[in-house]
Image (tube, rainbow, N blue to C red; front, side):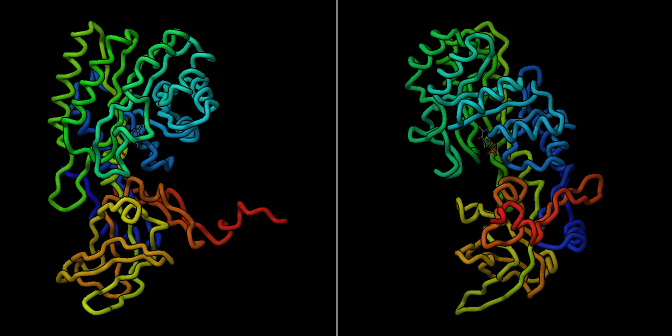
Amino acid sequence: MNASLSYAHLNAAAQTFGTPLYVYHAEKIEQQYQNLLTQFELTQTRFFYACKALTNIHILKVIKEMGCNIDCSSINEVKLALHVGFLPSNILYTSNSVGFDEISTAVELGVHVNIDSLSNLEKFGQQFGASKAVGVRIRPDVMAGGNLKISTGHDKSKFGIPVAQMDALKSIQEKYKINVRTLHIHTGSEIKDVAVFIKSAEVFDTLLPHFPTVEVLDFGGGFKVPYEPGEQGTDMALLGAEVNKAMKQLSEKYGRNLIAWFEPGKFMVSEAGFFIAKVNVLKTSGSLTFAGLNTGLNHLIRPMFYDAYHHIDNLTNPDKPLKQYAVVGNICETDTFAWDRAIPTIEEGDLLVFYNAGAYGYEMASNYNARFKPAQVLYQNGEAKLISRADQFEDLLTLQVPL
Ligand SMILES: *Cc1c(COP(=O)(O)O)cnc(C)c1O
């Protein structure tokens, strides 16, 4: 069964809570996680939800209650994870260009930490020596992912310690007797090609002889999910089979019980999220018809930020004949969601729904143009609950200090 919310569910939420509105579906998140659990050999695999995709604490609780671990990108995400009750041993902090104070705070809190620069590794050695285990993020110099802005493993990427600098890494490790427990590689987002993950396993294979204390091979996240109708995501059955095999081989080759970690963000929540907006204005110009919405790139920046595709449907009139539209926002900036898209014929006042809105949607929203951030709603057991309210006018002033 494919967990999904119907037009009726989405229309009911819009009716009750108004628009623009983010709506999430707990059962779909659970289904994604169950899918992972069935594909991988669980005695040698652990999953950490990359929570930067969506950090609302009620979503984090759903994740925690499923038994999933959590991956954080900032010390504040670590604190949010602790706040909702994740045990430190189930929290991973994968840092990038952070001050060492964040790393030392995370280590003191007892969470797993991946370090991604020689500079911070040296500071870790100075402060903790061999007393705490740590992970190192390697940049494998592999090009992968949906596009350059979401690729992180190539040889011009800021992420990780370049694989060419392994001698320097090794000498810092030896100098301070650092207990390197984890090798980490995250090459980007929307990686459809299973071979990219196997390439990571090959890089790990070259490094393992030099790091006898390593027990964990962290493959990062980046699984692709379908965006366009009929599109395929990463073949998780194939990925599971290939990784299971590679992990078994590496464990045997090095005589260690190696564990694979994964950090799926988008995979866990993208398809569980819907963004609903109202058509304020229809405007024609030559052959173009603009549908102008009561939202903009302030609420969903992915199309303008990195050309992300979001499927758009007419919630109010899903059965009308298709017509071509440019779907645009209300921000004083070009904020086009779709340039030339077939959508069931739109009338002013209709509600449109954007699919795949669970990951990096609300999370990247802002108050640009002094507009309110939208509310968020969670459907669980058929019931819609408000999990964060929309801004009100006073919210725009709360952080501003009277002089
Ligand atoms: C963003 C990120 C992820 C999650 O990426 P998705 O494409 O959302 O799966 C995982 N690991 C790290 C280190 C990240 O920065």
